[in-house]
Length: 178
Ligand SMILES: *[C@@H]1O[C@H](CO)[C@@H](O)[C@H](O)[C@H]1NC(C)=O
Ligand SMILES: *[C@@H]1O[C@H](CO)[C@@H](O)[C@H](O)[C@H]1NC(C)=O
Ligand SMILES: *[C@@H]1O[C@H](CO)[C@@H](O)[C@H](O)[C@H]1NC(C)=O
Ligand SMILES: *[C@@H]1O[C@H](CO)[C@@H](O)[C@H](O)[C@H]1NC(C)=O
Figure (cartoon, rainbow, N blue to C red):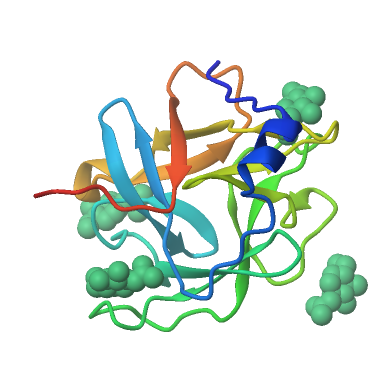
């Protein structure tokens, strides 16, 4: 399983810890045949897709802001035409180490199985600090039930036993399609 582990001291030296951006951004998934698909809100689930996921009641591309607690707070990207303002200030979460559900999603009130305050940066890569303080990238995607209609994938964290997932990294820069 793909894993990106970077020693803490290196990141400290690089000066990327605690870097705060005032502008909003989206995240993009990069992996085999997944060339920087943007992250969407899809009925509370985290979905990467070429376009707005077709089989959701509430779906919109997300504009994230960093909060001062290593969280990523999302709102609909209002400048994207067609975005339904379906949610407000929802935090991206990854399932905790003891969660059986490995899907990522959005919440306003994280449960003990939803990690919202461990997002850390390595350049443009967003990583998650694990319980031992290591910075890890354990994202993967899997074709969603409506993949054949819209090309969307569900975003997972820390799946180790599924052949159908594609490991990805999550970055804050869009692919250049020039
Ligand atoms: C919002 O959507 C517009 C139009 O697609 C895009 O240019 C802009 O980069 C997006 N903003 C964010 C924060 O993703
Ligand atoms: C998704 O939407 C398409 C039509 O756009 C429909 O044919 C399909 O059955 C839907 N899939 C699910 C799982 O709801
Ligand atoms: C990944 O899952 C394993 C159990 O399968 C757990 O021990 C580990 O802490 C998890 N790592 C992260 C970073 O969530
Ligand atoms: C958050 O969830 C907890 C436990 O489910 C609940 O007791 C609390 O009222 C919720 N808080 C808000 C603001 O919804």
